[in-house]
Amino acid sequence: MADLRLSPDDLRSLIKRILVAHDTSEANAAAVANALTLAEADGQKGHGASRIPSYAAQAKSGKVNGHAEPVAEQFAPAAIRVDARSGFAYPALNLAIEQLVECAARTGIAAAAIANSHHSGVAGHHVEALARRGLVALGFGNGPVAIAPWGGSKGVFGTNPLAFAAPRRSGDPLVIDMSLSKVARGKINVAAQKGEAIPPDWALDKYGNPTTDPHAALEGAMLPMGDAKGAQLVLMVEILAAALTASQFGFEASSFFDGEGAPPHVGQFMIAIDPASFSATGFGQRLDDLLAAIKSQPGTRLPGERRFELRQTAERDGIVIDAALAAQLNELPAS
Image (cartoon, rainbow, N blue to C red):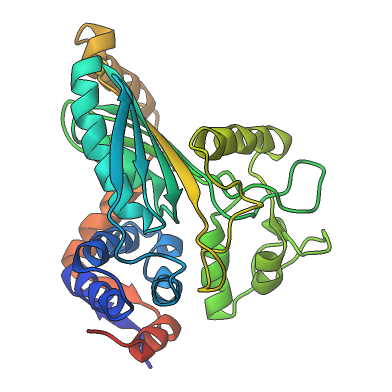
């Protein structure tokens, strides 16, 4: 089968139909389809269509409750807890975002803990949604075991994404998004699907040796970005996303990549800040001044700019699904 080119709308429709056919509600399937399609459009293929087969398998087996309806509780003026109820993360995160917007408007700052959750995809998308509502935002998430503690060879933590976004007075927000492994685990999954080798400094095999085999890497441990300093950031995010939300730690959570086992029940934590409350309305100009100083130097670009450019290209030219994945998707039942 050849590569498949789809418009974003057609990809969203395909993902939704596959998930509905795998025991997922229409509303939840739509939320997941929006998230995976946006990941594809932004060039984040490790969090895009490559996730469809594993998501479908997990919904079908009940590892993810495709019909779960998340529930939010505000238990303090600026504190929110969202229970994803063993469902997909995206409906729970969407609910948390709406709650944070309302809460931060009253209190100036608000935080949301998301528990009993699942793979949260591109962390930058969730903070971007808050920035487009005028808020400065931070997001933290954990996942199944992937990264070993510094000096160790056995995984303890997930890849633990960290994201930040800030609204600008005009144009797209500033978005900073990073996995704390040297690369996102999803990139290794894509390499495994394509049968491609990976660089030797991305991961260790299960014996603690550097590997270029993506399958061995998925059975072993990822290496943190920034070496020892990166490992400390991984620990910080694990505490915020898992301990603070009373969720499963990476070494306790089941895989995001198959339909076997119990729900992973990982966590996410988000903070939303109304910049006007803290800056006496001076934030927008100050941010513009800072970013202008960066852009004044030849060769520089702002974080997130490439994603927004790719998003525009995808809207115009469509999204390409490689032949191997297209063949997998073609074999999946769709409603």
